[in-house]
Length: 267
Image (cartoon, rainbow, N blue to C red; front, side, top):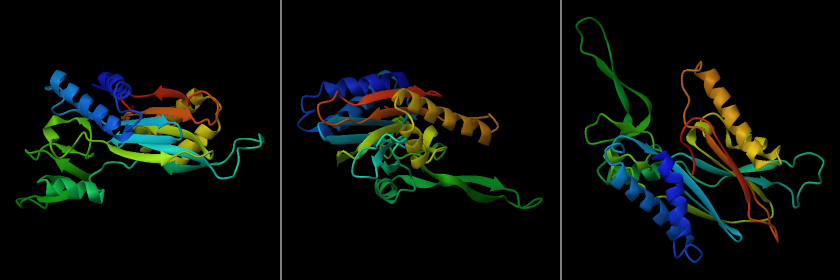
């Protein structure tokens, strides 16, 4: 499904008749079309498996970002009134362009509960002594639970994850932003990046590179190294980064490059 997701979203988005007149509707349709394709062709495999996704589309001076799950888009914005003077990289400020869909987000939690879903932490039994009944303790992050109560998910929107429907939805949240000359670059990253790097750290790395491919590789590499150090090499989440430079005026479209670490990532 990860192989399917990116080309399917892009194909449907750029083939949508209202892309230039209604980009929000086109992005929503592209995500839902991808979800329907997953349901038709990967129904069994997608029952207990899914993926997050994020997409950014620029039309003239407007930027549209659509996401499901906890992949994230971050922009690097200049803090001065003009571009740097060439004496070293210009300091950039990190600005979030998307909001993670997790069960501890109040509006997402309310949506799920009002729809009859269940949100709580995992529970584990704890022995209290010989012969005494175990006590159950809540641990870990809040999760959305399926009808059986045995499968819990840490995101509230995704592609796939059919067992979690209708509470975990594939309808993306779409944000719109007017671009200015202070907006320098965009980073799209999967959750494995943001679990180990702050928004500002990623922007600082990207600001050091003229080549967006090199920036994406370093962001992915730093995230992978931190996963390795903090888990003694035992685990790593999906690590994918995409970096795009923004240009204005009579210049080519934004340059973009990606780097993939572990499988999966942003679209």
